[in-house]
Length: 317
Image (tube, rainbow, N blue to C red; front, side, top):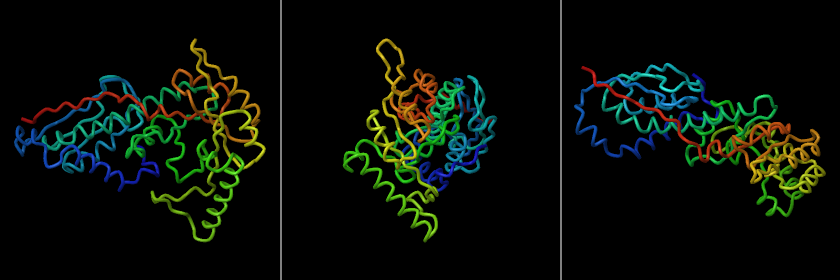
């Protein structure tokens, strides 16, 4: 199976699983304890009820291990695999009580991650033949960001910044509070220089997530008009420009990418370009055809539909 990406720290993942189990079980599974004798063992079959990209098997296994380490698991698939409907993803064997107590928490993680990975895969396919890379955003479920972003990777997408700590991304409110585009970019350059000097003196700077900051932190700035874009280019302090809502979805269904195409032509390779706003599975192909470097979509994680799985248990004779 795939290794953990650097932002999925095993200790924090364990804390997340423990919190989820505490939320569900609290002082005990009263139904299971009332109906299943303590020593009862069982087998369980995990089935994908629809086609998609499976993601979260390792998390499910950690949930089981936290409830009862003696439960054994055999996966027929790996995280990131494409599976057909009714595919037997894996089997479990052990305490019936443990499997039942772990079932819902394990499925909740698996179904959400697989839904994200599946949508990401579909959107990546829509970009086939273009140079554009699909990025996620910070529009993730609170507390689940590391899993949401991991699922995007498993679906074939790319991660934008993990949090507020690993990239300078100047957006509309930052520009307003800083007194304009030029002030914001100049301040960002100064801040980056200070961080690089600190790194040179004392080694890698650790964030609150115990991750070292990148050796060269990028500066990205959001623009909403061609005038703002010209000001960014004139300043010269940005590495990437986010072209926000440069794509218009007309009432007729036509996808107007003319403003985005114009902006990319104005940039002429001087900066990396990123399109955001009105990015859906339906618009993605047209946006990719403009030649934009990156396309970011909050839809990957903020309103994803969970992929359907079932866990069927058979009591051992």
